[in-house]
Amino acid sequence: SWAQERLWFLNQLEGDSATYNMPAAVKIAGDLDINALQQALSEIVHRHEILRTSIQTVNGTPIQVIHPQVTTSINVVDLQQLLAPERETLLEQQIQLEASIPFNLENAPLIRCSLLQISAREYVLLLTMHHIVSDGWSMGIFISELSSLYAAFCAGDPSPLPALPLQYADFAVWQKRWL
Image 1 (cartoon, rainbow, N blue to C red):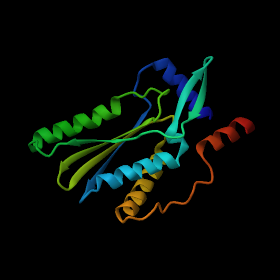
Image 2 (cartoon, rainbow, N blue to C red):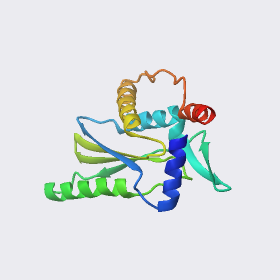
Image 3 (cartoon, rainbow, N blue to C red):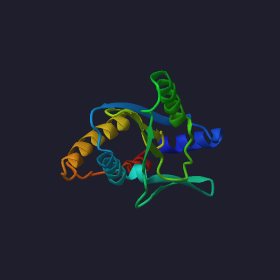
């Protein structure tokens, strides 16, 4: 899409930069099934081609490459053993660190996920995506789908989400053709 080309160009100008990272932190209270959360994350990445996309440069031109499969693992960081002041400091540092690590646009996935365990029943889920594959609206959709899939997988049910009729690449092709 035109927006992706603009972001690619700006990324080329800035070099290794986290300027276009889209970070989100979600507090989770209660029992957490990390395996179901990982399964939900993997399902979303499989479901949305854009989350399996990298941007390759061919003769100076950005080319979107959709990978058939990518691995997206949740990095679990256990902060339970720390005293409250240390835990808060490390929590803030982890949030800043995750948001500040640049993505290499040529390497999919352009999404990272960390889970910070604060106590036995308290977590912070950190999601970071490059803006070339996400925006504020799609981050909201991502979190909503993650919640729905997590609940289903915890119950041993299949995905409750309907198949997607279109992918972002379909929009990009339409946009290039008509604008």
